[in-house]
Image (tube, rainbow, N blue to C red):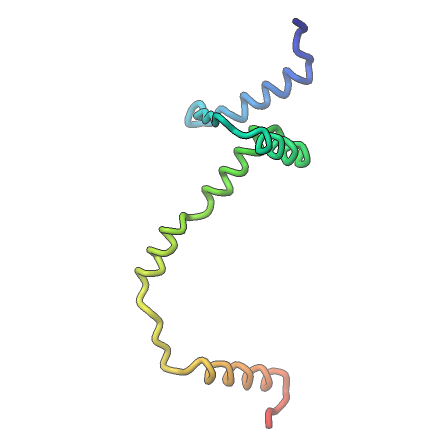
Length: 109
């Protein structure tokens, strides 16, 4: 068995440093029974971005966690009182158009 190259050691050390956070060691997640098709596509996308598979999947997870779950969004929407404007939508559009025309120095007929 050959020894790891200097480049491989640097990459491993960078990965270990990345995994260590100020709060302690990062947790490990293992995903089993991934289809060959899915694994191949994840590897292809990671390579295209110049990332390791781990870094690419971590980025995907971070992006997913940045978005609130649909249930939370719906609950927030439902918690707000319904808007009851005193003016119709058509009237608001007319007023906005009139304001724009005044700003542009034109008059509407």
